Image 1 (spheres, rainbow over the protein chains, first blue to last red):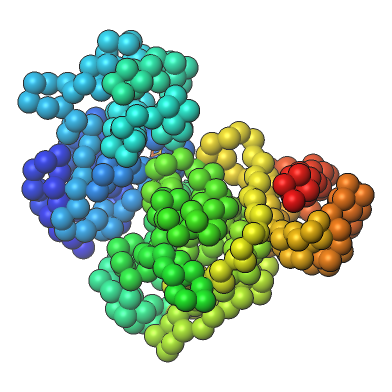
Image 2: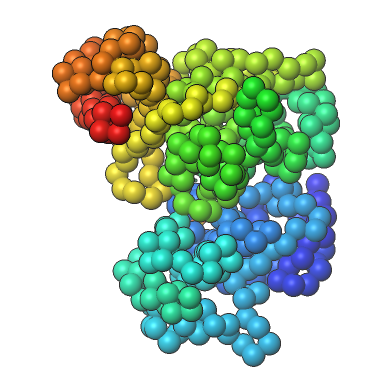
Length: 152
Length: 281
Ligand SMILES: Cc1cc2nc3c(=O)[nH]c(=O)nc-3n(C[C@H](O)[C@H](O)[C@H](O)COP(=O)(O)OP(=O)(O)OC[C@H]3O[C@@H](n4cnc5c(N)ncnc54)[C@H](O)[C@@H]3O)c2cc1C
Ligand code: FES
Ligand code: FES
């Protein structure tokens, strides 16, 4: 039996109908066709599936759709752009060459966005901690950290 | 798989009495991993995430109480915890990364009942009581008797954990949480410990030592504590206590580490904590 949730999705009030035991990740990628969010490990280790739920970063592979409540605020990587296109953080990733294969980047952007929401001036250590739940197998993290540091 | 979605605690307890073998789902950071592996195939899931009655950290007179659905992030951010039990926040800060801390709850950490649960030695060292509730009522269980064996607790079908209470720690106490894993972030513990000590005029007048991950259940080192209690803290006392500790524990070999390494770490942790206490006393 499917259930209905009326949430704020990337700034738009959206009613979603899906199985309550489906992973939020599958609803985002499948039902909502928002494929920016990636699946890596499927068990909370890699952060590729990170989304913002009520302004906090979470792994969407570890949340069931039925656990959402009406009125929840969900932001996926697609919701980061503003009217003029890529936001400052996204442009900084491009400028710093922080993106290689790109698989980890949506999650990195979401984790960095959450970090900057709670801490406007994170130190390098705090940046590293903020993205500790996001694995990248390409970049060695250096440029990702620099890209985040540059918008601080 | 049925999805039960109560909107308040009373409804949750009613559903729990009707479906005693349902799987309780809090933050899901353990349950979702188990569902995916296929090892867990419950007939029904009882979602308790969102029961705001269980998401609070409060000063209740003689105790600090922590609702079962308080997340690790809630605990890290709580001014009350920060001021009175900062080692609990220190332990929560080592649990996974921020994604897991935002979702994982203290009730889930305890009820997952993994020997590697990082809040366990802290709750043990602070002699927390666990609030266990069913539709019939509520009981308080001392943390020391809460775990009955590997991944087993006193919680019966139809019951759930609703919170914890911790008596105010005395003033002037030192406490620490120490954990060793294979790397700093997102790591499952090989050994972790929580210590508390009160030292007056160089004499130990209060001591509490708890280890996690060295046995199927968290351990309170009663013999080592008894040895230290009332003694003057010197380098010699520390050496003797560390020797004593080796016979107080029987660590386990498993995939994460060996018994010998664990015993060694326990000694190093105790020595480090007591030496630091000596320096500041
Ligand atoms: C990547 C990753 C890293 C992790 N790292 C660590 C770590 O370093 N240290 C650590 O200790 N843990 C770690 N964990 C495990 C986990 O995050 C914690 O144990 C967490 O606190 C579990 O809480 P939860 O709310 O997500 O529990 P859930 O997954 O919802 O539930 C866990 C268990 O408890 C039961 N349960 C939950 N709440 C209640 C309740 N109120 N009453 C009765 N039963 C209940 C459930 O039925 C289930 O059996 C990690 C997990 C992941 C995915
Ligand atoms: S896919 Fe969710 S954390 Fe890896
Ligand atoms: S850029 Fe390839 S995984 Fe990070």
